[in-house]
Length: 228
Length: 228
DNA sequence: TTTAGGGATTAGGGATGTCTAATTTAAGTA
DNA sequence: TACTTAAATTAGACATCCCTAATCCCTAAA
Image (tube, rainbow over all chains, first blue to last red; front, side, top):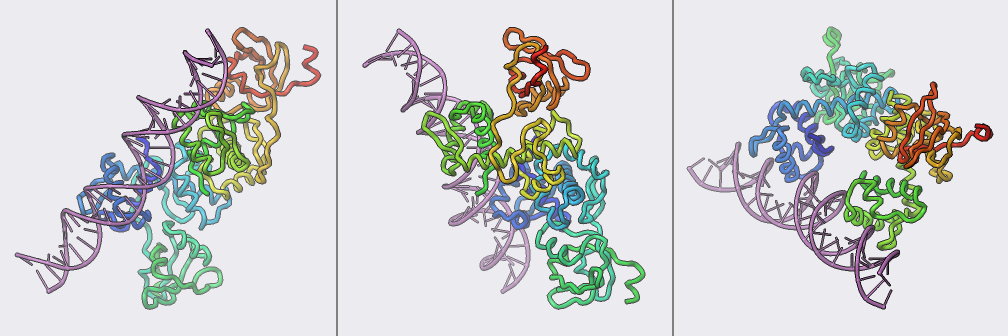
């Protein structure tokens, strides 16, 4: 049963929103995510339900079925392998792979996926630090890291992962050398959630609006944080 | 002005048919090529004409405008670079690249094209021996080679190019080691155009139906052919 | 318990790309 | 010249995916 590229985008969006929410995903969230109107989403949900990709409670939102999850993970696997491949073999920068992967993920064959996975030596994460679901499509373990926006001043953390959902976020972070593996010191938490961190080789201060800090997933540096 | 993948397929089909025909390309030829019905083609031709991609004489067929040719060559460049890249860097066999390239050619960015061209060292031909239109999009010189189906018995020729329009042809030739650069001896020209050639390391006889031999473009081996 | 507000759905329509059936045109034949 | 026929076009319809406007449903507040 072939899915259209558009349907795949809906499945992927529902999967990502599901992980942020835990609960059922609402029509309006999907509409925002995909930049379409609510009635458009409703009619697509009808089709996804017919195909057993989602379960629905009228007026209450949707969740993916086991089948829907399998499809979502396959798409995400495509996306992240493409990002890794473009970065490592075709000189793409960390920030610009997303858009290309977003288009190509719907059009590559299983053979293509297998080939680039082999060329990459079957990697477990993509260049953003996101786990790549493996070919047997196990469910990945619960989202790694904690949002940077949740930390107090003077905490030292290491970036584990950056959400690639928004190219504005990627551009901004790449420009300031905030990538997976980078060590950050939280310098200041200002009103409205603006966070200033020290990053990069020169410990340059970088200010992150809350909506960006929310997408930087980090791990604490265990003992160190106690002493600063 | 973005073109849909479907429009691009029409432009590509018209370009290829144009080269076979010299004259105007007829509706029914396009319909056969793309496996759609004639009315479907007619209505698409209306749209291509609106966009200045083709010129039309009602009931008499179409030809590409300069703009249409530019678009066609861009698509063909994508296609052939993809074939070359998949073959050289992702272990695709010579025969199986076509289908993948046919899908991806519509979805890759200029940056992707530039990257794979660089990775290939700006090649001039693809793995089938077809010229790759360069980035400045000059018109390629008139089709190279002569169809194998036009040769007499006991001629020695070298394969220059194989049409990649039909995967049956590709499979058949790949299986018998007939690829660009292969030297062939025409052994027998039988009734109904069936041609037997000697090919490969062991000079194994291979029989080619006329519709396949038609797609093998060859050059003569100048002096040698006189003496056999 | 009733009601106001907001999110979800239904109703109806547009663009794209496809189809079958009917009609028109070009061009060769008698 | 008139006729026949094959190819091309027009007519009308369907599926997909999108929209705006109108209506419906849930829930929280009075």
